[in-house]
Length: 539
Image (cartoon, rainbow, N blue to C red):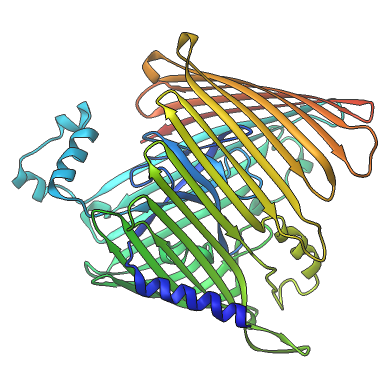
């Protein structure tokens, strides 16, 4: 208990010392994965900066998974900072920074963003004041996933995704946004056995209607992940929000999506309130938020908790992020009662002393979360699942000159009564001026866990732009050696990968990826292959 109070005391001192910023959520998805980096596609990356943290929504938590080390207008390249497994099309959440800029910076920013299409739409200052408030954009994509193996039956899945965002519909105070996907096997609907139900195929990640009561207040109805309540995850219901100077406060009433298929489940009631304070200036920004929530199952308290988050970039070349979560309801002497138990701690500090060198250190101590009504019997399984993300992680990136980058990370996962400690390390070298304007990346990864006495993975990738940057192609080879503690013979994998990204038109893109694996496991040979194809149209 003393340790919990000490952590919170440090947190409150931090709140009193610094100021804060407002942030807006950006939704993207994983488009490509290598041994060292994860590529994420967004509608645009305006407001995301190198060194920022990207997240995934997991149950009711927003889990930090990537640190941005490079970005373009529509994509980010990130270094993993957690052991959470990411796959192609995994939804990723970025937090857009909203900064106040000097008039000079605003002019430079607007000039750098002007395209030929924007120039045709330029108007006078008086016309700008009278221009429509409505802004509409969206994306429609179709993706196929094919898995081939000599040890199991092949299968192919198709996924259709639609994202719409209409701000101030027909110049009114109403706004609408949605993110929906539908996934099925290629044989659907000819084989009824392939059909597992609409709720498993149709995923509604966001579907909400917002009404602006005034310039500083609004009410939203539907399913949404709210910026000031990102740790809560998606909410089905109502949200009221009010901004006053640098403060924002509000309340939520509704339910949680179903744990098993993400469908609407009115029996999982929840309600809560939040308060946040922000500051932003020429140096950076800062945001601090506090929320208290009560989650129920059939009107019985399932979980009652509070969480604090603090993001700070006001100090030059320093980015700080912290998140604390505390359960206010639990079992004491087998009796349900009010309590105070720090269940989650995440702290990340990034420092960039020079333009060509940056380093970061993070600490993750997410403990087990108990749901006393929904999952009363799964405490051990839940603990084992959560503990793999605990530990310390150190990252660095050094660019001695413009064409060469050296980076790496090392992690130590904490020991517990259920699992032993594990260690991992990764190092990469990148050079962008190989023959034919090719970029090469060399990686080495090592891992040791209670189940692996050693694992080493060596990788080499080459990528090159074509057609003035409209097309990018990449090939990669990886060699992995796995020595398990309970086997004598090691497992060896040879992995080859090819990928292609092509911007056919300004808003039309295609992406394709092939990965083949040759595996030798205790003398048995297994072959695997996966093929991914995606076509996406923005409008």
